[in-house]
Image 1 (cartoon, rainbow, N blue to C red):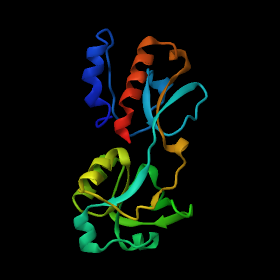
Image 2 (cartoon, one colour; image 1 turned 45 degrees about the horizontal axis):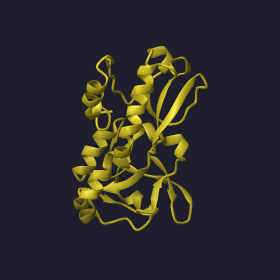
Image 3 (cartoon, rainbow, N blue to C red; image 1 turned 135 degrees about the vertical axis):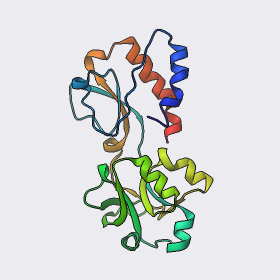
Length: 200
């Protein structure tokens, strides 16, 4: 929301002067019906049949670390080496310090137990820590893609990524069926689709 939606809101508001926005940003699950939201942008699939979801973008998570950390501690040669490193864990997508990863080349699915000094429920906090050279983390490309391209971060074990299916982790715009024909909802969701190329 902060990185890929909020910066585009001035353009949306200028394009649609009769639409007002009440924006709430949170990492916690939002009940669309109970909260009375018109649209919720959520990572994950549609689990409630009373809601409609439009897929906006994939949500690939990759292993990465700052070059300074890897120069200091060494670069892992395989998934088992992660146990000897300081790992930064996003606790909303990990269970008891276990990363579920998949080897892209072989398709092998692995559970890797990791440990470290920082666990957080906010991906941006882990992002700041990994940029600061604290350790290795598993974060989405929409958050670390620019850092990888610029060299601020380096991919670790590039054939590995989070072992989650695209439908389970994709970014969706979710809204109640009764708002399906709402012109303001349709306009906002279409606008999000326009912006989605920058999320990957």
